Length: 288
Image (tube, rainbow, N blue to C red; front, side, top):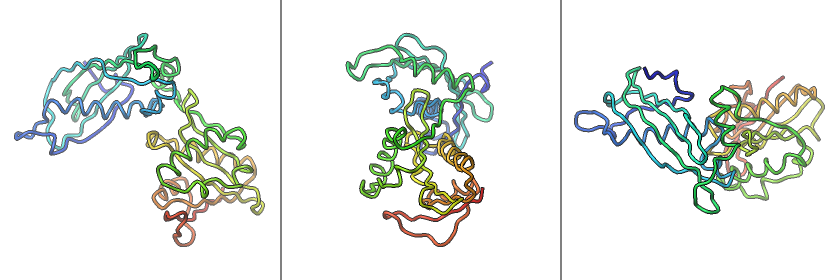
């Protein structure tokens, strides 16, 4: 019997009106779309957010074959649980098994074969060991990310890559506003996958502040890597650094859209909202 417990990853989504026919049954072709959504989430959870995760190793992946079998229909407003697991990694192929349930009722099963290709040649190429390691770690329930803290001289390559992608390119903040003298004296945290691909960053400023105080800032997570807890890993790492230094009072200027994230970690708003680089911000504080 095919069970959700047989799959290392499950993604949930809801059947929409546009996906059903006149009988309110899901059109058969949509199952591959559901699978594509779930596979994207699987790669993100594995620590290989697409496309950065595979292109970091100068490669890409393409679908070679899809097979599926229908067992029962999905209907409008059903919540679908899509199970995904890696069944095999060959020389240049990755075989993914998947299944779909609605309220525990098996709807479809299938298999997708991907081929890993070289960006340089456009031809099939061996699956890198780093990709194999990420998939294996996830399948075994082991961490697929790591966080390192250090000085700007040691962390700037990763931190700069993430901050450029998020602040300069995505949020259109001028580079002259992004880079400042605080970087040199701050402690920086960078979260990466096991292969060293930087995915998130943040910094802890303590120089120039009154004793026992520090400020967290420049928190950023690559868009393709959001939703798997990397912001939490970076923030907790910086809070841990502050505790080791005997810091008792932390502050930060949160983008208002991220205020709830910091509130979950105990930060409280202080004062009124204000504009910084054209984005609404809220000062927040925490006593350690």
